[in-house]
Amino acid sequence: MNLSVEVQDYILNDVIERFLRYVKVWTTSDDESSTKPSSSNQLELAKILVEELKELDLENIILDKFGYVYADLPPSMEFEKAQPIGLIAHLDTSNAVSGEDVKPIVHKNYQGGPIKLPNVEDLYITLEDAPELEEYIGLDIITSSGDTLLGADDKAGIAEIMTACKIWQKYPEFKHGPITICFTPDEEIGKGTDNINKSRLPEACYTLDGGKMGELEYECFDAWKATFKFIGLSVHPGHAKNKMINAIHIASRFFSNIPESESPEHTEEREGFFHLSDLKGNEEAATAKLLIRDHDSEKNKRRIDYIKSLKNTFEVLYPGLKIEIDLLHQYKNMLFYLEKDKHVIEIAKKAIEESGLEVDSPAIRGGTDGARLSEMGIPTPNIFGGGSLFHSRKEFIPTLGLLKATEVILNLAHLWSLEQKK
Image (cartoon, rainbow, N blue to C red; front, side, top):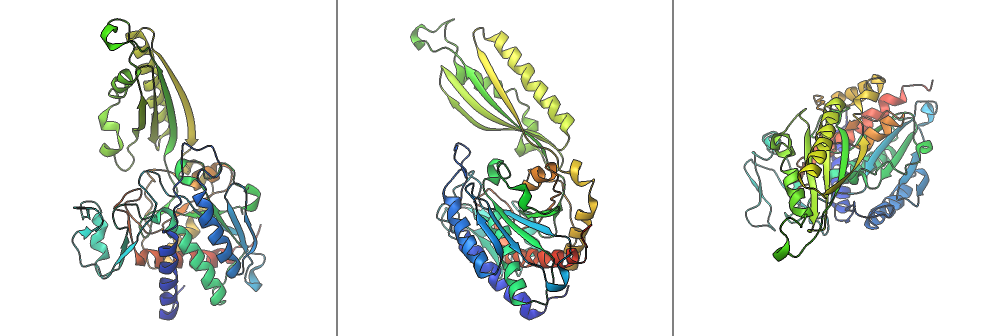
């Protein structure tokens, strides 16, 4: 689909304006919370989107009690019987870095070299951080001011979907079949589909979530979370010999036995890892969270067997120590499900190619709502949002990425409009 200069300019102005507004809404999720959604701030953005969806003439708009936003876009007149599709993005941002009071900066006409983030001394985005910066010379690049993340993961996906809806409203020549929009809470803490209403979603969906321009992802980690409790015995340190069982000290020794070569900072591409994300406690008791990741489920099973063996060893080494491990299988590698329905992938590839980009399909070193949805029977590959260095104060996105992702959505909808319901 060829876009005129007028339409491209309209898309670019609209998607940038939306993105800059959305990132200023604080939506960090909270993995310690028991509420749904995990943070009430997510509802603030959800309410804004509901009002904007009304202005864009979508129908059946709902913000449910769990924080999910659903809306339906009626098809172009001649495509009522086309195969429906779903477009999904998540409301929350990672709690790895503050998402409060984001101050986005548009760096005009990037000319190469480090990008200074002004609110933190000596903080720069460099080519070492992101070699793809060399491809963005001459483009405008959006960053935070350095003391927060930017929130392109996944405010970019939301802005791109909303701008596509605006284009369908303003330019009826862009044809499409039935489309369902869904914005989910708590994706960053692995709960994005926990309370999703599957009956509101079509048989094929796409997430718009992360990834550099051209990326189409349909393979992700097999993901486990291990939660530990070390139960020791506190005794006055002056009288502790052969009596104290120092839970926090022993826990530290326990995790020092995890191979350093299998940590996130020493792995890439298809290499799996252990990731200690939390450790706290005292002499009496300590708790920890360990993420276990690999694209190969059998390799993860060996990692789990290793920590179980380590538990037994430590309980022998420290008589009286008790270690409890709670294992949660967070999501499976979605390739297992998507390779059974490659048509959904092939249409997305064509949509990306029609936008003038080369398709790149790396295995995701993480997960998306699509992994869980695919397991639930709704094939859901992930299309790029256009940004880089997510979950970081150095997160950034070229404005061209916002434009191209929106263009891909328009292409995708047109291609699916030609598919008739079975």
